[in-house]
Image (tube, rainbow, N blue to C red; front, side, top):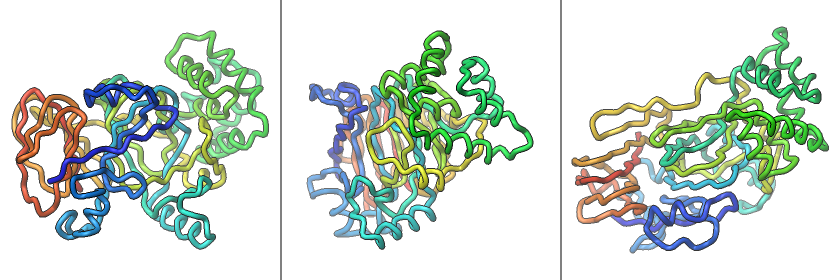
Length: 373
């Protein structure tokens, strides 16, 4: 077993204190958006034996077993401002896109590169504080009702298009989102939406104003009209499969994903946007409810996800648990005795495949175990 030092990512949307407070250290004064615990080559965790990706590469069989690599990445995520409107590719799309951009000679660290690796990026976000997000297309009747409430004349044509039952739902969604993302000057209609939202008192209207204050004139404000707006209570989770359009707005949580950094963006960002490629990977289908139903049994909560890359379990209170590697254990409160290691709040450890079954003993603690499913 190896204790991990997470790599802090200072993205501009991060808050300045949540991660530091959890780790009981003085905040740096700069945004600390994420702490990465894992072996992704762009930001591997440090260990006493070197970067975790190099430790695994030196003994793949002993560290991660038959998988040959660590298939997941664990993060603390602290958002003070909206993240980009985004979606992630399926594994087939990622492999094809990665090979295509390699063949085109695009450097893998280029800012305009879409595919940083040949892997998909399904992910789960588990809230540690109240957490606001937008996730998945809401049923069209809900968007039509929202447009009726806003009553913005500039959106009358869009409202009619979304309400046209003679056209397939996916085609209506694609047409509207594509049209918005390709507007040469979205500012007039965005301003009209925000002016009206400021007059309303609803969670969605407040989110629109919040987004507009962070990104004036940005087309992401319009895309937000199509999405579910949710506020997770602490302990609730979102699962985001391939092709799901989403954006986190604010809050602090634990994020687990397949070991990938592939993101296609459509707005609310200063980073590279590729509208055509985003449209290629988006699944234009409404979903009923993006909030994941967890399974609670005593001091254990399981978050069932339909992927093989990772399984996430949370333990709270007092007891013991068996951990089989490859796994990452992340403490978020109290102390966990993990074999010979002691993990305090904000600390993590890697349990290797050849460590066998390791017992975690805990009292008044809160921690996550991430393993392959």
